[in-house]
Image (cartoon, rainbow, N blue to C red; front, side, top):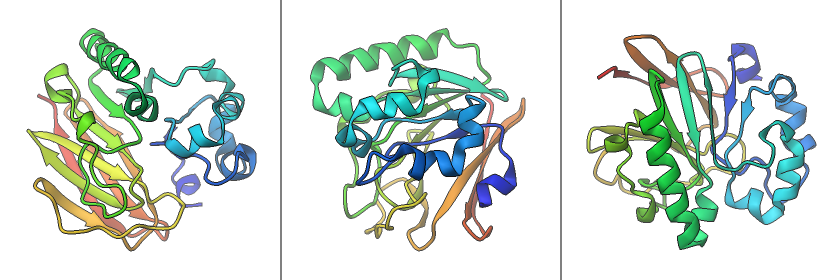
Length: 224
């Protein structure tokens, strides 16, 4: 309801669109159907999506035409969506996605370039934590921001001058954060919420708001 009230141009997910059920209509469509109908709902594949069957994922978002690694955008932002579940499960998939991302970021003329994946390269979470295998040279390749999920909490980190945001607090049971790892800036494991991005020529701004509308974190990234 909070997201709907904000009327964002598009909705991007960081995976696990369904959980313990392949019911994309009941778990996603009933809430975000207006963005799906306009082809403005851009999901990443999570490990639970893969576990419930990617055929159901593909059927729920037919405009993706079966793509699980893709780029899309609007409003001055280009999103580069990865399938980290496949990458972590296969060295071949890992290398193919690395090559695709490096090439795609270099070729993009977008003002803001945001990488989206499910497993967080950096996280202070106690259930899954970080996925070091995914600590790719995103900044050197041209990314401005990396968004991830998997840990059911919110955390903003800065590593090597690049902002990473973990936002897995969109629905399923929340997970507790542990001791902050190096680079951790802001953390919240007590509230469900959503991250809102706003782009201008000069900066990319982010706000994490709880389901009842409280502002928990606000940050900006200046254009280099």
